[in-house]
Length: 142
Picture 1 (spheres, one colour):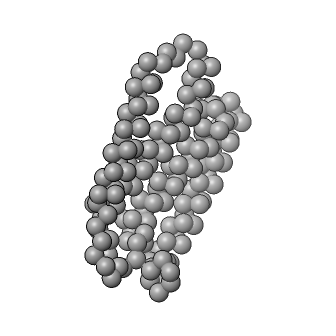
Picture 2: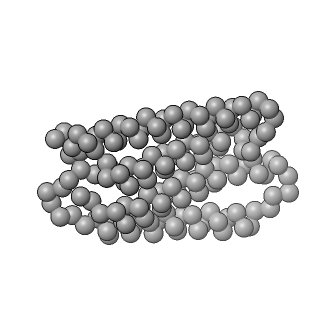
């Protein structure tokens, strides 16, 4: 066993999923760049890259958890439920605060919409964290 306590099969699955996720990231960035070249802009520059990277990282993490390649077999019986619940509660509170801020903002022109790219990136990351934490709760460690 290596230091992260993954056996050989889990390590191979993790590497395979990592390679596929990297290819997915590369193709999504190429499609985004091609659409940008044709004049289709869905979000301005820094936000579109961060959203694509967050989506690919979320897919990578969920696939690792579903294939039992995220955590190796443990000798101890640990229950990180309290830590997971606190993280989820904090993430939900922050996301709710952003939703309240978005409700009071008025989007009368595109300049204001472009300023909202940072909250959009944060909400995307928060959703990815929530999905990963719910998946961690559902799937037990080996």
